[in-house]
Each structure stands twice: as C-alpha cells, then as structure tokens.
Amino acid sequence: MMKRTFALMAASVLIGFGAYAQNASTFTDTRDGKTYKTVKIGTVVWMAENLNYAEEGSKCYEDNDANCAKYGRLYNWKTANIACPAGWRLPSDDGWTVLVDYVGGEETAGTKLKSASGWNKNGNGTDDFGFSALPGGYGSSHGNFGNAGNVGYWWTDTEYDPYDAWYRIMDYRNNAVSRIRIFKTSLYSVRCVED
Image 1 (cartoon, rainbow, N blue to C red):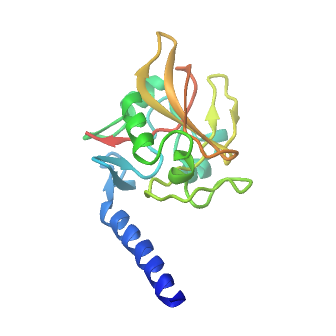
Image 2 (cartoon, helix red, strand yellow):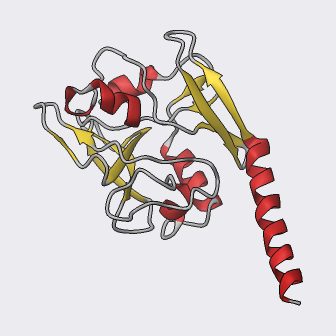
Image 3 (cartoon, one colour):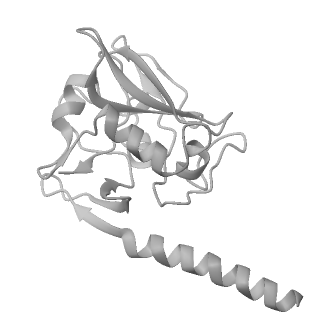
C-alpha cells in the first residue's frame, strides 16, 4: 500500500512537471543576442527571467555587471515602458493581478513564483510555475542601491498619478506578492510579457 501511495505521488509530481515543461520555451532578443527563458502561465507568455537589455537609463545593481548577469538590469518607469523587445511589453497592473490570482492569490503567490534558489535567509520559493522570480533589489535616482538577494520589485505599465506608478514586490520574509505604488524615478526590475 505504501509503495502504491508513493508511486501515485511521484506520478502526480511528474505530471505537474510535464505540464510546466510543455509551457516552457526560450526567446532571443535580436537587439543584443541574449536568450531568455519563457513560460506560459494561464493564457499569458512571460519572460521567466528579469530583462537584461542595456536601454539608456537602466543600471546594474551597484553598477556591477555581474549583478546584471544574475538579476537583470534595473529601470526607471519611463525606461521600463520602452525596454522590452519587439513583440513584448511591460505588463499592466491588471496583468500582474491576473498572474497572482491564477497562481493562488496575493498571500501565497510569492512562494509559488519565487525561484527555488537565489534568495537570502532561506527565502526561496517552490517555483511551481517556472516563473523563477529573483530578488534584484532596487536603485534610486541618487545612485543608491539596496535589497538585492532579499527583495524583488517589478514595474507595471500602469500609472497611479503623474509621479507614481504601480509595482509588485516579493520579499524573502514572506509568501506574498504585494501591490504598491512608488516614484517613477525608482529603479526596478522588468518582466516582459508577449504581445
């Protein structure tokens, strides 16, 4: 009986992995030749990595190229809106909400979307959907940086007012994906979605 239960559990894990694997692909940005993993979650194809295109106005965390290789680049809101390659775009606030709801809701979505490694202080997720969120931290217009390894911040294309825009945040300390607004001059990560 125990062997049968174990076999059924293993089969369900493999079936789940197979469904994710069928939704995984890659995309090559013709502007610089970088290849990104992609994943279809629900009906939307997302980049499964933070964008790392050197658009004017973007920066590497602490101005270190190794951080760009690991976490992608950081963009202010204006730059984030033009940084995605042709055929891709910055997701809307509503688009992020659909993603978060699809994977189980705001309170637990962080665990399911976070990468299974790369987060400090045992803050890794289960990466159930292949989104592989990594904590790229933030930058400011004054040249300050913080929170890489601990917190990930991702822009939406949606303004709150002339000065602020909406973003999503995942933190090593909890399981949530939170929705917050911030100055458009802040430097955050970008995940592109396919048009």
